[in-house]
Image (cartoon, rainbow, N blue to C red; front, side, top):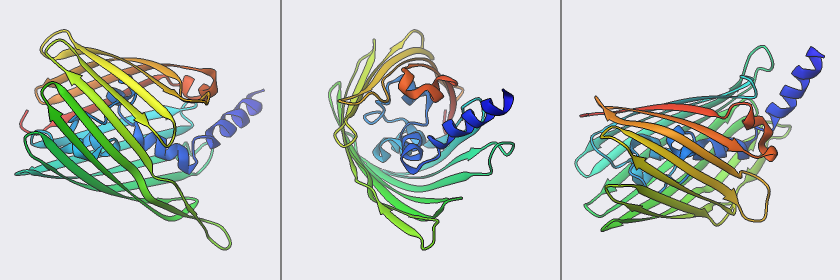
Length: 281
């Protein structure tokens, strides 16, 4: 029975360690983003924005972000580390994401390295990043993201082109090259002193999401969101979370996801925790 359980877990793990799912992880590695239903494209979220909209990296003096997630009872592990620096109106950053399996089950890993730059004026910012892919079954890979954020009054608008020119050379004999379609994403946000609301639509994957953040004190907020899809029973999930923001320069995000049976593996680990440190407090 124990052996059958291990085999089942490994089979579930293989549904994660594919290129498409790795891209999904990179798109939404933050507990804050997850609790907001993935709707972080209109938010100036610092270095974690490299995974959403590189234009959102242009915030404050820069900082560090880290997130660790374990799927399928710890069989598949995902880490995301990002950092950014401010230089006038320009911001420079980078990130590294790893997806790997526990050595007791399978020796497998994938890596994504990203370099990003953003430029911000008072009401508008633009940004881009370049991503490189490597791994146990990947010879090399490439993609790039382009994004912009525009603010007017209490409203924020975003447009993102993700995974542009995406191509992966897979390990095989001979090596196999596959190209992937770019994703077109738009977002709208509204913010005031009582709440923040953010939404997004991915026209390529047919996914959409919305989230709301309610500040309760100067440092503490509660967050809730929904992420769904049009015409497919995947990625439908309600999320809730807590955010402690800018306390001594640190942000702590915790999310819990109520997800449907189509994503049973993620149901085994509905908690996500991530942390951010802001230079300059």
